[in-house]
Image (cartoon, rainbow, N blue to C red):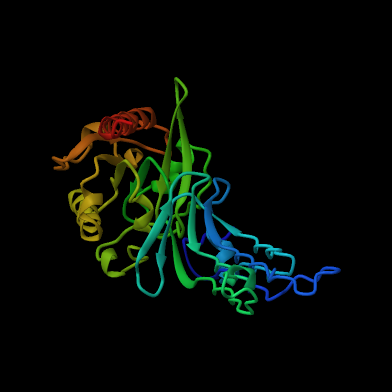
Length: 338
């Protein structure tokens, strides 16, 4: 399945039905009063978060969505039927903005959450609504109001607890494949990961957390170099970052500093998230006594792993779990009381 994390679509709500101009026709009643009914409301368009979706693929091929109009009013004070609302499913984590003005319309984080993006037009009034003691046979009626129409941009930001960050071939995909059931593409050349990948990590005691692996970053990624900063949006909502520094890097300290700089250049708030320093590919050195010393004063923990040899993975998972739990507890403390 193709991964699509951005889409611009046009949404057109339904126009309201027009009111009716009608008069009663009854036997032995020569002059019946006005009985024109109101028009029905036009259908509205909503977005709804669906936990079964992980991509905006459908909207890349169907960029225009329209709701039904309302039916016209009828005689006998019959109101026209309202147009059906349209519910468009999107993955949780979708941010919605007006594509023309850039105004943020909202975001859908939790499954089942809904957002109105185009309101249906109201139905017009029938002539029965215009009757007064001095104007007993009105012929006035109103047309239905047009439904809202706008272009909206959908931006998917994956929901994960931990974001794996590192340069190309730092070992992120291999790590994800051995700590979860995810099956990312793995090869010995750069940029094998072209789309974000998610995996669920299980620990003893029914503990789990979700990890997101994004394409590798290179120096200047925030300026569009390499694959650019496009995929950094997928770790904006993570609680903890895991910065991988491969031990076959020419200068491990420089590799770490570069990743920190790229993240900060993209978003200062993202750089302020707690992070764990992960020294990967320890199978490439004779012993752990030869581990390089990396100055990382803001790292919450430093762990050395070898995904190929399955070494240090438990220590990595426990270190990350401690930080995820700590951030989760902090979030609970900051929640307002009901």
